[in-house]
Length: 107
Length: 121
Image 1 (cartoon, rainbow over the protein chains, first blue to last red):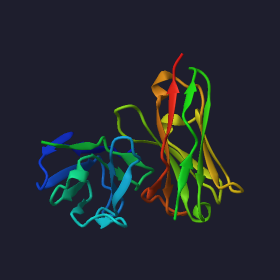
Image 2: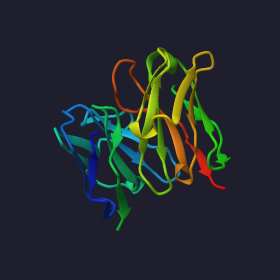
Image 3: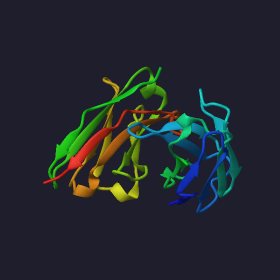
């Protein structure tokens, strides 16, 4: 099973700041088999990024994904109030596994 | 427009079973797979298994093998998750989600609203 480790567990930032979230895989997931989701309290996850760097439909361009192999990054260039949420990475190279999540909270 | 609408909350006794449904709109069943993902209170997301409704083929996470059954009814475009031998640690929100491919694992682009299953004596 491919294990995904997300860091940090919690990120405390202010609106307008840049957020950098990390996702590390226990083995290579290539450059294409990694997705990012946003989840707000009481809601289902929302797809943000697939193929490591392709934004899903309707996702603002302040969200960007990068990386390949075992190291991936989700960057939010300037945090908006609605961006404070929990973010999960997911690999789909070998079955499906999710990372433990990073909570982006208001500082 | 793809919509996944799940059945309502359930309260179950330990040792019993639960069956959760997920009705898909549009032509989801002809071109997609359906996954089931659960989330325990305050915890992360956990993939349980999935089905390709068009072919009836299923795949389960090893953790749930033998205890979970995923099925689909093409006539009603509804997928089902049945979990048996329930224990308190199965208390979670259960989500169905669409994988937009019949032939390979991809991302989950549409999600149901979630169904709370509470297991308590």
